[in-house]
Amino acid sequence: MSGEVAMTSPDRPQVAILDARPHPLDQLTVNETKVARETVLNARGNSIIEFRAIALEEPPKAEVLAFLDAEHSGSLSSKTERPTRLARVQYDVVHADKSHEYTESVVDIEARWETLHRVVDKMHQPSLTMDEFRVFQDACVASPLFKEAIANFKLPEGFNITIDPWPYGGPDP
Image 1 (tube, rainbow, N blue to C red):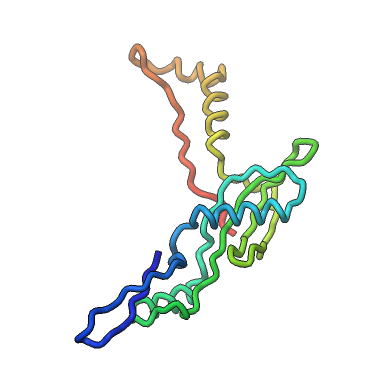
Image 2 (cartoon, rainbow, N blue to C red):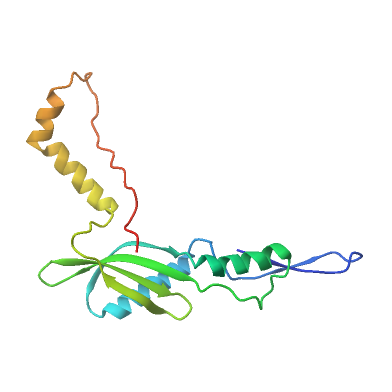
């Protein structure tokens, strides 16, 4: 959380006044994450939603620089304009026929409103969830092709084989 410092004369100590609003670059709070989730659920109606990720959508650089200038100059106050807190929400909308659409929304936390909603083209693969990593690992280890390839190695007795997926991140907007 950011703090506010009231400037005083040299003969009086500075008084710290806490500002309950998060710094514009702080990760989302638990409550902000819940607001983003509820906003998406309300916007999608009765659809089944499988959430993949909810994270801070960083504000535009110009807005952050204006805030940082005020913060670093000591002029930050409760009246200082702050960038809008936004959340990027990545999720699947699951349909009755079990097909799904990978979808992204950007939610204005304070307004509790979607500022962006898009269905990602099927040519793009979303990042995997932890459950999908587990299913992938189990399917590979059980595969006859994998077992055959591993048999070509001379591994010590009791050697435990695991697959360590290395996610590189989600798609850029």
